[in-house]
Image 1 (cartoon, rainbow, N blue to C red):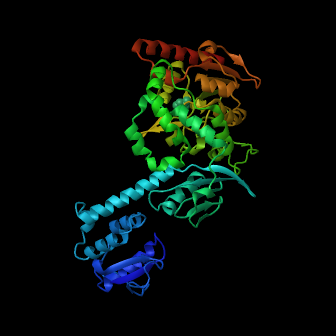
Image 2 (tube, rainbow, N blue to C red):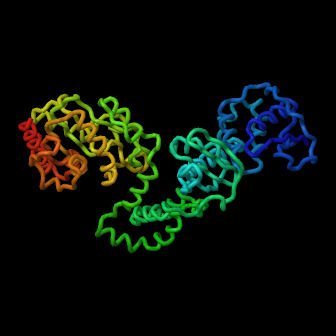
Image 3 (cartoon, rainbow, N blue to C red):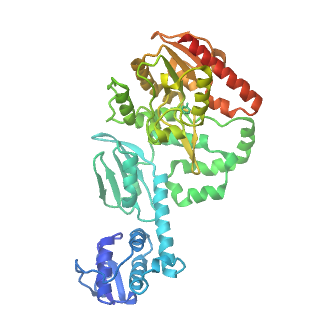
Length: 476
Ligand code: URA
């Protein structure tokens, strides 16, 4: 038996060096031992590893990719499996394509487990707030199914760039100080805080979004395997919520689901505020505004959106039309009203004799608020706190464009423009003078017209919408 020493559990470079030496020295897989550190020292004949041994045949990239994942698997025989594959690749260069081969299938399965563990880490890490000498920081304890910490940490850097955080795991820790990512020693659970202010909100939020009518216990456990529950604050609620689900479903049939706890939203607004975002900055052009909104951290909506979408139209447009928020297509295109609601708006503008090119079209909220459902992103109505946070941008647009008339589409736009909750159906069509000298008119949102159930109502309501636009034209 020949042994090679790797420096740690995920030492891919060490394994590669050792495997090359074994392969060129014709050490068969049955005789090759990979050991970590000084474990089993003295039991085997140690091979001196040389840096510049090349495997004398080509190794496909597919193998290297799989090997880099498999090395993170917790099974102790992963090094042997990979070496067996490497050994066989010399005579079977297309081996990695034979997915029914027992070794290939085993490696692919382990690579899949690793990728799943990384995915679960992205979903289930829960940070808790702490204070240190530099102020607010965030610490999470996590127990990944496989050794995916280093592979997954860059995701958290991208996601939480502006926060200082650490993720502690039994395999090692990752630390981000806002500038650089560093890895350190394994930790124990007691090194991470267990409770914080957010926890209560998080549980309340989870309970309020938990939909008993959609309860599929098996699917839920598939998505949120039990092994992760002990570190998830919301998991403490699952038994109770599942037990209550039948009764709650009956109640829900009669009553729509509640809004997430607004206190949670407010706290999230506070914790997500990016200190690098300059709140004192006042854009002096629409281009500056468009750029500045990309680093807006006034509310948490930036995190899940592709970009901030500002208004579009002439700098001195006499008419400003304000919608709710960018939708799926607007979020991708970076322009307001280019999706289905935009089509309804365009058609109505044309019927009313208004050229969209002359209008400044924008939204009360600049980021797309949504939730994932399968591959789709489903629109969610912004909270009052989010609309209020985004008024700063709308006000900046108003003071740059200085429109004479502002048409609001729907309740969110009405709130964003006037700062007051209004029943649009009541206020519709009335011209309201504003302190800045502009006149506001309110109407429904074009998405409302798209949702109407029958053709006759749709036709009537579209007619009323065009009438409202004609009234706007009359004011210009
Ligand atoms: N709905 C809106 O309110 N705004 C858009 O930009 C698109 C859809």
